[in-house]
Image (tube, rainbow over the protein chains, first blue to last red):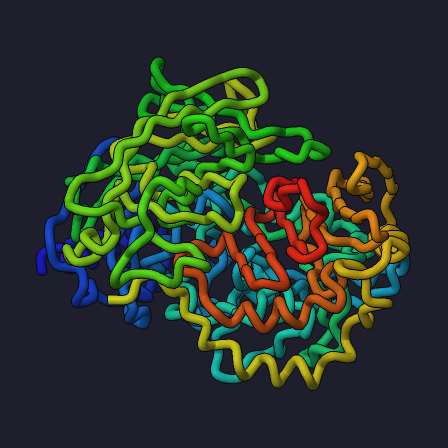
Length: 457
Length: 162
C-alpha cells in the first residue's frame, strides 16, 4: 500500500510546484486520478531515482489506471498537467502512456472539460473548397485508432512547459460531439479507443523522433487519395459536414518536447529529445518499476550523452523502404524493419527456435503470441543493431517463459517477448529493452551534437 | 489474468454511426487489385496519383507505384496476369478496402480474432488459407504485405516480398 500513497503524494507535490511557478493571484488545480494500483500489482517495487532535476519526472510501470481491469504489462506511465493557455488553471492527469513511437499529447476530453480549452480552428480554404471549422483528427495505429478534436493548451511536465500547442482531445463523453466517420472506423479496424479502459491509460504522450504527428502528407487533402483521412475540418457538430482538411505542420498535434521551455531559464531549452531510464529487473519481473524521464539531450549537466553510448540512426531517406527503421541481425536472420519503442510492451521478433507453447497467456499458434521456452531458464540471445551509416551496437537479451512471468504478480518485465512471425522483417525493441538502460530518443530537426533521427543507449 | 488482449468492446456503437454517415466520404472506386487482373494496377496508379515502374523476373512482374512523399506501393503479378500480392511502405495509413479489393471482406472477417500480442498497437496480422495480411509500423512508417497463397508462383516466397 505504500506505493499508491507515494504516487498520489507525488502528484500533489507536482501541482504545488507548478503553481509555485505561476506567480501571484488565485489558482485552481485539480487532480484527475486513475486511482491506486489494481489487485494484480502486488510484489516487489524496483525503483531508479536518478537523475533528478527540473527537467526530469517519474515514470511508473504498473497495472494501469482504474478502468483497465485486465491488468497491464510493461506499459510506462507518466503524469502530465494540461492547463488553459497562460494560466494556472490546470488539470493533472496520471497514468498517461509514455510512447516513443508516436508524437503528441492525446488526453480524454472529459478529464480536461473544466479548462474549456479553445478549439484549434481552421480557416475556410478556397483552394480545396473546405469550410472553416474545428480541426478533428483520426489518429491511426496499425491496430485501432483515436478520434477527436484538436485544442490548444499549455502542457507541463516536470519543470517544463510547452505553451499553446495543439493537443488531441479523445472524445470519451457519453454522447460524443461528433460521431466517428466511416473512414476513421475503417482506419481503426473498428477499434476506436475512447476510454481509459480501451486505451489502457488516461492519455498518450507521444515523444518520438518527429516534431509533429503527420508532416507534409497532411498539408493537402489531395494526398489522402488511396489512404485514410487523418485530419478533418468540421464546421459544426454534424459529422457528415466534416471535410478532409489541409493542416500545416504547426496545426498538427505537436510533440510537446519540441516546444519545451524550462522554468529555470536554462540557456539551452530541453527541446531536442528525451532519455528514458528504467531500472534493471529481477528474472521474474517487478510488481511495480519506477524510473526517470529526462528532457533534453546534452542541454544541461544531467542529460549529457554517455561516452560509451551507442548511436543507431533511423533511416532518414523517405524514399527508402527502411525509412525510420534500422536493421537487427540475429544469427543468420536479418530484420530490416527494426525500431526501439516504449509503446510496444515486449521484444517482438520471429525466432522459430523459441517455443510459443504458452498455456495461459496468449492466442493460438496461427496468430502468434508470447514466447514460452520450457522450464524456468531463460533463453539468451545476442543481436546486433546496425544503421545506414554503418554504426553497430551489440545487444544481449533474454526471453523468459511468459506463463511463468504472468504467474508472478508482476507488471514489469525485462525478458518478455513474443513472435510476430506474421511480419517476419519486423523487430520491435519494446519496453523489455529499456530496463537496465538509459535509452535516448532524438527529435529530427532539433539542434543536437549529432543530428537526428536516432536512438542511443 | 489476461494480459494479452487489447480490449475492443467500444466499437459496436460507432459502426452504427458509420452506416448513418457513410455519405461523408468519397466512395471507393472500382475494386482493385489483389486477386484481380493486372489491368487494375493502373486503377491503383490513378487512385494514388503516383508514378509506376515495372520490372519482371521470369515468374512474376512487379509494379511499383511511387508517390511524391516517398510512399511506395508494390503490386506483384503472376504469369497468369493476376495480382497475387501487394506490399506497401507509406507515410499515411493505406485504405486496405481499396487495396485488397474483393479480398477485403475476408480480411475484415478474420480481423475479429485478436492477436496474442495485441497489447502492441503496432502490428496486426491475419493468416487464413485464402489470404495473408501483415501490417506493422507507426505513423509515417506504415508497412504491410497482403497475398493470396493459392496464387503465388512456384518458387516465390511471398513472405519475403517487401
